Length: 145
Image (cartoon, rainbow, N blue to C red; front, side, top):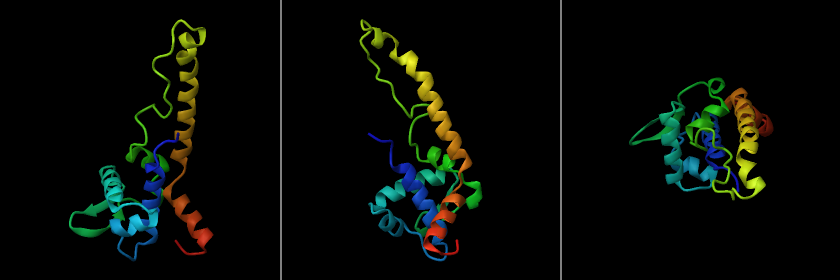
């Protein structure tokens, strides 16, 4: 089981919009790159727009970034696409057997650990920007970003 792919797809969309700034980044164009349905892209674009990361206008094909690459952190994307509810990246099973010594104690034992793990991951995402992603792609492709 893994967390939603919306996070990776959100980063993909934003990076492609930037790298395709001379072209039209329609939902069909973005969907072809992600290899998904344009309706999925439109849903994510709505989330990204609501979070102030992209500008889109109904009836007009294309999108553009609403902020500079260096001003968009991966944490911004993570939050924008609702990967998980607040502090719920990891879930603890909700109905352990309280007659068992582990069942009685498992939640209180592991909740602080998994909360710390989520916080650590989010701090890494706060330090990484969309500019870092785009620059790495451009370097791999030997293109100017």
